[in-house]
Image 1 (cartoon, one colour):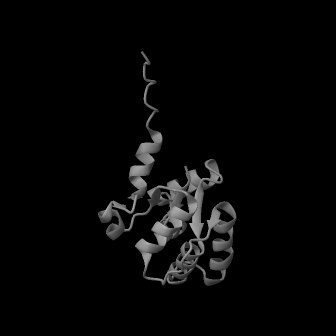
Image 2 (image 1 turned 120 degrees about the horizontal axis):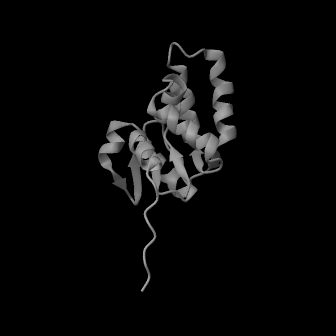
Length: 141
């Protein structure tokens, strides 16, 4: 099942090395090739946020976002959204990707939990879940 990465995860993974977002992005973009989806809205927000980080070199932003784009599946929701429409844009992205989860560390989104069948999940929770062994097989009568 594909997962959607929110812009905050991509930005945090780009600037906070060693933290949960970087570990999530590394795991999904290197081990789970093709399982991660984003939309143009996600990439636009990621670029805008990186441009606002004073320590991120301005001339590196474009190539960095292009590299992210090359490692994910780009989906196109049926509607367009403004820069502040995080919840709606991410739910639409997840639906366009056939995903049931959006990975984010955005507190407002995490507080909502589920929206229209889409779960907003924290990076730390995803990492814990990803390291858990699968459940034992069930016995059939």
